[in-house]
Image (tube, rainbow, N blue to C red; front, side, top):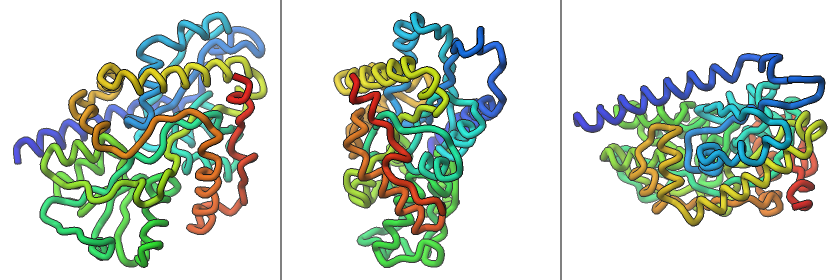
Length: 336
């Protein structure tokens, strides 16, 4: 029990640190970031503490951006950590982020409410899991009836997939279960403390919970929504219009880091530990048991992204109909 509370406390502290990073992104980028009219000198990039977005952590930690963006005038790349996609998209809507590693679903929500930006690459598919509290039994989705489930806020990938899947299983997500919105740190702490019955979170949080003996993975997101896209790389409309050469280079770096990670799990896990304080051994175990895959090609996620727009419309999250052209720009990929 002492170990459980120790790990829970560490996650709570990590969550507070991440929230501090999130708060920093809400401030308007200082005028000093522009050394001359139209010249871009600083890039602000948002990400989340998940194995889904390890391409960014590797690229940032290895200095890939510094090596190739300097000739284009970029003097500094600033990384901003967010607990979930909802506040990250708020920061992008405010003009505080140039690029964002984020779930496709929160991007859809933001695009439907006025965000000027496009997905320029895929980052990863699948890779989340439902974890049931130790002591509870699971034989079918019907066993979830009456339980309290923590997951990311409304409009995120996890919330969208969970609610859609529950409906497909004959359960009313509003009446048959209680879904509470939490970031990964808070949700992990909650299930360890017995405050919720289950969580639906991206890796490596499910593995962390299992390692603490607080729960067991009962279903992976790929079983709930086969081959779904989760995280993507989004560029702001301003970057696409005014600095297409930088967008093209950031995309190239993303692809390079993605391919590097596929061959260097342990090193990539070390970079993630540096940026999130999560343990490398837990990250490695998570990669061995998740159902996710790192990808880059935006063409392979078009159908999945547009399905999120349909799902969110059905859930009442968005009112503006969106199609692939509204959400994805494959031109940078096609020019590589």
